[in-house]
Amino acid sequence: MVVAFLKLYQDRSTTIQKLKRVDWAGMALFIASSTSVLIPLSWGGVLYPWDDSRTLGPLILGVAGLLVTVYWELHVAIEPSFRLSIFETLTAKVTFFTAFLHGLIVSHPNSRTASAWFYAIVFHFYAHLS
Image (cartoon, rainbow, N blue to C red):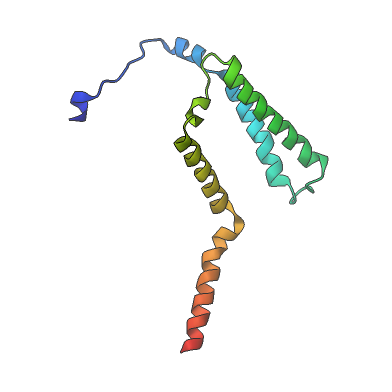
């Protein structure tokens, strides 16, 4: 039934034409900037102290690069890789924010041990009851 009513647009351009439309500069900026943010976040407090230039330098450059990426996608790119129009509605903003919070909570080190800690307390409590 879906096949009968679904109308799909087929792009008839060649592969070369499609590759020319890709925002290569925007993607390169985003990959370099996000890598430059993530690596010092994994180094900070483990390999190098947080106030060390080997941690702060790439982190500051990465954040600046992400800001340049946003500017590029908004004002320079003809066909942006990251359409910032997805953040226009309140529903989208709330959805992305809760997904961000979920990622923070799930990736927190204590979230892996919280359930084991909870079960240890419960079993300890019930062991003293019997």
